[in-house]
Amino acid sequence: MIRGKSSYIRMTSLHRALANANVAQLIEVFDKSIEGTDASLLEELQDAAIQRIAVVDPEQAISLVEKVGSERRKVLLTFVFEEWSVADLDQAVKHALQLEDIDRLAVLDGIFNARFDLSEIELREIASQLGHKERMFERLASRQLHEPIERD
Image 1 (cartoon, rainbow, N blue to C red):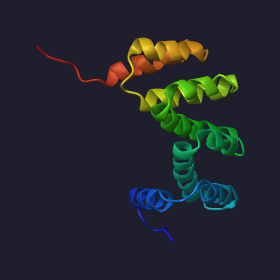
Image 2: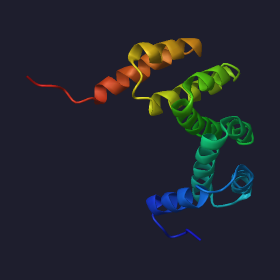
Image 3: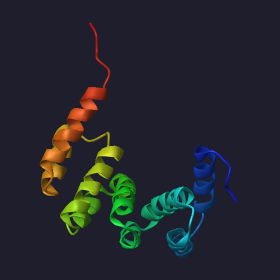
């Protein structure tokens, strides 16, 4: 189907194919990706499916993420909260408070990755609510290191 194509072409094709799928079809795609054997292609499929599910039904996306191992779980939760924090930041943070402490790190990463519009104060407040204020300090410091230096 998409073997032999570049990663960009595969992801574009996957996102197009999944754009009009309903939640049941997306869940089926995600579940099948867990059972496969080609790890890199299956991870791309999982990533695309979970991102689309997160747009339509973020709570369903989280329940699906619970089916995978801890390393993939972190990556997928980050994707879910990237999408959810853009659609409804307050609900995303509220739901994140119910998650395990280690999962809240992925939540924080997702919010940080997606919400460039939030001020440092807002990001620190969210990090504090999630119990990971120090993580946000690290991420903000890293962001500042990569910002261009303004010259007079």
